Image (cartoon, rainbow, N blue to C red; front, side, top):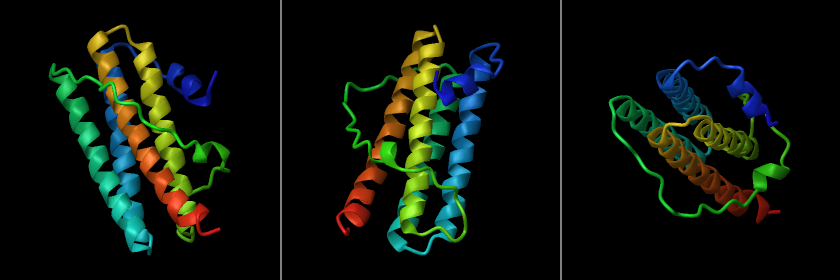
Length: 160
């Protein structure tokens, strides 16, 4: 069983509202992380990516708040490519002295974990509307990860 599965299963969700509250907190944390790091990184292009990701995480929070009010959001049939670059990278801790490569690595791992979170939450619920919502959010996180992997491929791997 994966680390994220273990973590989720250890949380005592009593109902759909508990699951949504957990997911909303996760999006708030992601927004806070990207907002803070957008202010700390020096490379303009990475600062812009982090600012955009922070904004998109707020959009995910908005999706979840709308679901709490009864709205249904459905995933698309779009296949999101996975370059799997982050699968072969050692996880890096965020620190004020991290370089551009480390910042991208941290962000890729965060997006990978967010994807796993929503994929697992989708599997845990019997509520079809909620299942669809979590699948849609997993797709969004997969897009974030792909975007970061493409940047990493262009800026880091091609330079070496």
